[in-house]
Image 1 (spheres, rainbow, N blue to C red):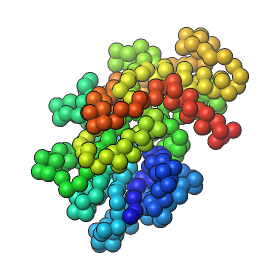
Image 2 (image 1 turned 135 degrees about the horizontal axis):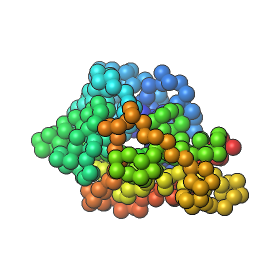
Image 3 (image 1 turned 60 degrees about the vertical axis):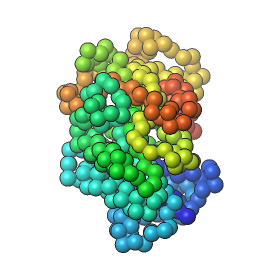
Length: 333
């Protein structure tokens, strides 16, 4: 039977497809929206049985074409641009689409694993999967939050099959190049350094000194491993934070990125102070457009994930970024 991955040409989706391939799984239907055609490159190295546009797929689901044919759906497809304020589009694409797939999976009694987001927490300081800590700051976060609320209600009523939502924190890693401004800090730091010999970070804001705003940066390698763990353990349902469980400052990402590049150049690693002193790391004024809409600190409470039996260690920024830079340089030369 077929596994469906939505958002399969995207960042996390394509990494999941590759990981399924590494297990010998090739009966995979890749679902995406290739209006932005450059994303196709993420599927070139993947083995799939079919590709469907996201609208064609939901229509076929509705008409019963896939009844009895699907083993599981890993739903990664969404508009992830937090600066997109088109609420109608966001709710149709992120909320309504997810709801339709969820209803199909419940009717068919098949596992449904989906991407939620740490954006559901907004400006909160506690990142635990509980209603009192949630308060999204934008319509993207709200679209994710709203479906999480549906799952909570349905879990109380009783599910027919596994449903697991993963609140992704700041994910970085291979195959995010199409995301533009929404790509990770590590990706932007890498390209800035390669193009100009410098890296720029936001200066002080919200009580934080230059470059010390901190996020839970999680490697896509770990994100994929968690998704496959839940696929292998269909008795586990719920909403789970998916981060490293650590908060690291943006300075750490910049230092790790530059030093990984310097390693490839045959140059010694530099400390944060040395990078600033030599003008390799610069700080720019915090953008007015982000004030009041910015999470200055995130750290996933991954206790619930650990309770579900996932016990593998998560990569640190230093480990994950080092591997990511190796991949970027191998790809770009």
